[in-house]
Length: 284
Ligand SMILES: C[S@@+](CC[C@H](N)C(=O)[O-])C[C@H]1O[C@@H](n2cnc3c(N)ncnc32)[C@H](O)[C@@H]1O
Image 1 (cartoon, rainbow, N blue to C red):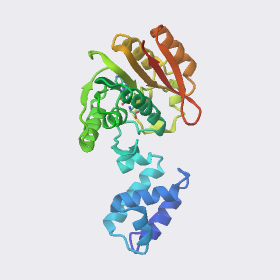
Image 2: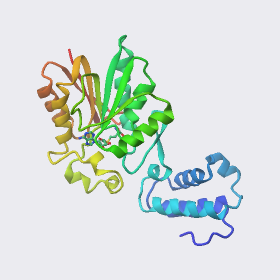
Image 3: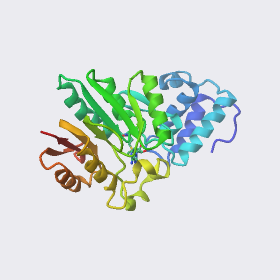
């Protein structure tokens, strides 16, 4: 526990903070540095170069508060207020999921498709959260008009802020999956897919929004099943559907997709850890 604000240098604050974070993370030193760097608006190199410098009381108090939050298990990105995805910093809030590295696979699969087409395309990102999927695609294609959709208005506000910060032009819509929306060449989604039995064991479910995680009582597949049923009427010929799912759901997802799209090519793609992660449906 850090008790006094007297004579705390960068070095001693980092040492104390590192000790306090040992119980919650494998990288306590790095995280203490990131938190202090965030508060001082300084790089880790600067902190190490100026480690003898005394800390202002206000900065030390803010650092103590940040360390205390992290020590409760609150994820680092919520305390920092942003997290990197596809090489870009995205604002995150308690209303949004923290972007995960495995979701970059979906963005890559979408870009493989959009960049191979020499025509104008429309794409929708369902359950956009921070906007990380749709904005990363929009920023890396010239021929694709992107719509970001979420049922949660607070999440949409974060997506809008990210779009503005990144100078990326997109349309934002509040909707329940594809309800009330038109036709698209590409439908992308990282929907909620955690099964109720797993929710209680999931450390992040204490901090990340249940609306972003809870996939419903049928093994966490309710939202995905509804999305696949709706997508049949919203995907243009030659269109592409990409849906991220949980690593144990591959076989069930394939069955659902084949039933919904009997004439399409249905593929299950593994992530870089070799786990089933992504459904790709390509229409004839
Ligand atoms: C797993 S998070 C994905 C967030 C973001 N796309 C990402 O990959 O980090 C699922 C998102 O779907 C939204 N959502 C949940 N149910 C929805 C529904 N019925 N219609 C639209 N969005 C929904 C949640 O608010 C949440 O932002």
